[in-house]
Length: 262
Ligand SMILES: NC(=O)c1ccc[n+]([C@@H]2O[C@H](COP(=O)([O-])OP(=O)(O)OC[C@H]3O[C@@H](n4cnc5c(N)ncnc54)[C@H](O)[C@@H]3O)[C@@H](O)[C@H]2O)c1
Image (cartoon, rainbow, N blue to C red; front, side, top):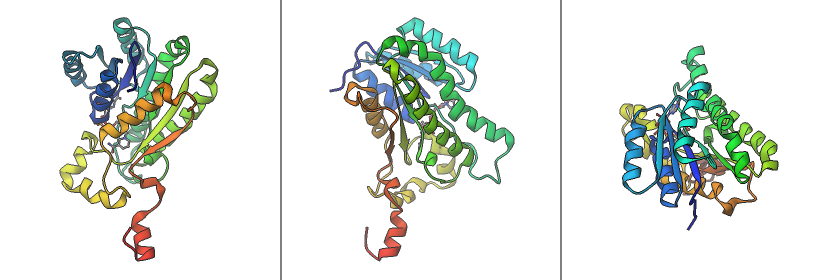
């Protein structure tokens, strides 16, 4: 079993669907969890983890605000010690089309999904350098690879992929590895506003996925833990789809093209 004993793992968006699954997964493998989220719910979640025997500290901050990030990470470092692993997971998706996008909503999407990851990496880089084997896992999206709507979000997620490669290139000499995960559709609260409009949306999406299901938060946690662990010691700058096969090809078109039951 992967062992993160004595490693402080900072997870942003820790109060959300994927964030909670990752915090629990790393924590059950010995990590101390530095949980950061803009939602105050992060404190209740941290208390639950602590109750389950996982060393946890929490801070509420907006990752898009560099001063809030610096203050929050200083507090978390004081509670748990220097950060060895950063999981840039916090994200938002605001507006479905370019036509509905405003300069303000574009800025907010890019500020959270891209600038926020930079702010957090910047704030922990000295810790990661000192660790000598630090790791960053950026949670991008299949939207960073192809256009699936939500254009500002997608542009930011594409930027996050290039940022991951820049981190890998520049900080490899300090033993720091940086990798990105591109999830497909994951069943989490980020979908709530669309589930309200179309309750069966996630079930309807399943036909686009070769594995005939959407992704579970734990699937992302497993991949993130692997990439952050010594088992991935030679992996840096990699962009890993965790998408039930979505990016392998267009299965709906392939069914139509071949008249076969894929
Ligand atoms: N769920 C999906 O289908 C899916 C697919 C691809 C990628 N992702 C990515 O996975 C990550 C986690 O998403 P999720 O599905 O768990 O969503 P979620 O809404 O359940 O969780 C996101 C968390 O991020 C926090 N957050 C948002 N903006 C923040 C900010 N400015 N500062 C600090 N915290 C902030 C929210 O409070 C929330 O707790 C996101 O980056 C998302 O883009 C999700």
